[in-house]
Image 1 (spheres, rainbow, N blue to C red):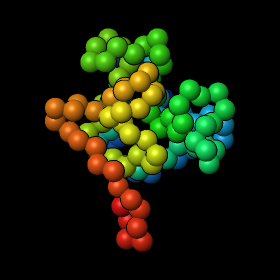
Image 2: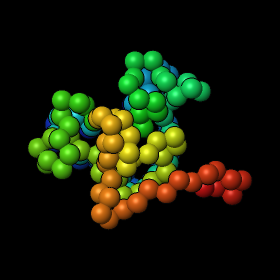
Image 3: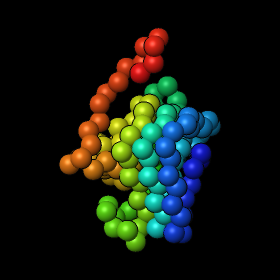
Image 4: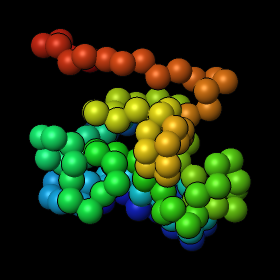
Length: 122
């Protein structure tokens, strides 16, 4: 994991490049009652070409919260809050991280836009 927060911890990611390698494809992880706020950066998790890394229930776990600690919007549980960033092969507004249609994005205030990589960037 590139970032793991737990036990009252708060991490604010405002930019940078985050990548990992190997069979564990969780890149950014929250547990306990930790919070990760993401407003920018580039995020790319390891995984096979098919997207199914060993031991995971979803491909490319760029963002993940410990299942037992997930109650969206509850400040007493683990949270990941996304307001910006580029997530390779991962939609923070609709993913399987904590079950079907999990969102780490406040859909009333933010939208996710699919981007394609070009020679000039994203």
